[in-house]
Length: 312
Image (cartoon, rainbow, N blue to C red; front, side, top):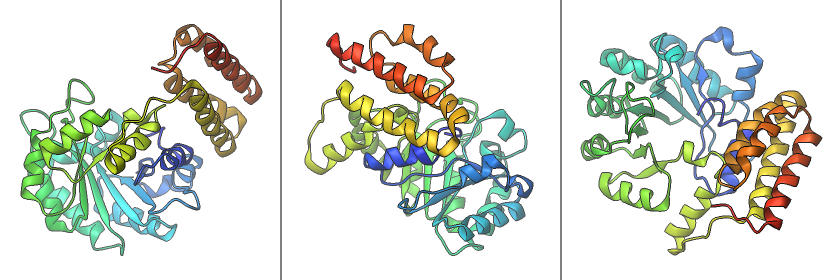
């Protein structure tokens, strides 16, 4: 979720009931630590707790330094990324590329766990490719190293985000570990959450892409598990209010120029279920100011409301 789970996005998700949010992936390379991009990625809200920071890299020494740095600036959980399938990450032997070197995985996890006084968690995948699904081995290495919890995406690195996530490997991992196991991948609805938890016996679910433009998924899940209530999908009025709050946080966080541009993808996600948005998408992509963007969005929602449209 690099480029997505910034502070404004995490605040919106938490306001809807997300139990834990994690920072965008932060490189362990020390020369990148003081860049504007990294500084934004490591910024937490005052009320964001526990504060989980995700780090990525392949050098145990640099990852230890990054973990210590994270704790020094307020991180209460260190999350190590061994699941990112992006080429630019795997090409430097980080992210899911580490799944091809179990000895290095062990060294990294042991080194980081022993270097910081806070819990260390791991995000990983089922393996490098379908012929090398060593997710259970990696998970056992993680538990032995002192990892506090492990999140497993039900795809290999080779799969990327294609096809359907498989949960057999997650169930296998859960059956052989005593630490919490979090299942991830294609978790898009209450029914999918219930089915996946039952199938894997996992302790929790991790919501990723399904929360893009849909932070209500956390509210819906909490209502279901707390009170056995199936909430209706949000009306356009509520969708507009939450979108507007999210956009204003983006403007404040990034400034007008960058904030407006980053906001475009969020507008697309919030609105893509609304009839008539396809023709409006081009307009949004061309607006450069906060006032223009907000005015256009309000006009679109008002027209949709007047026509009696409701989010799907």
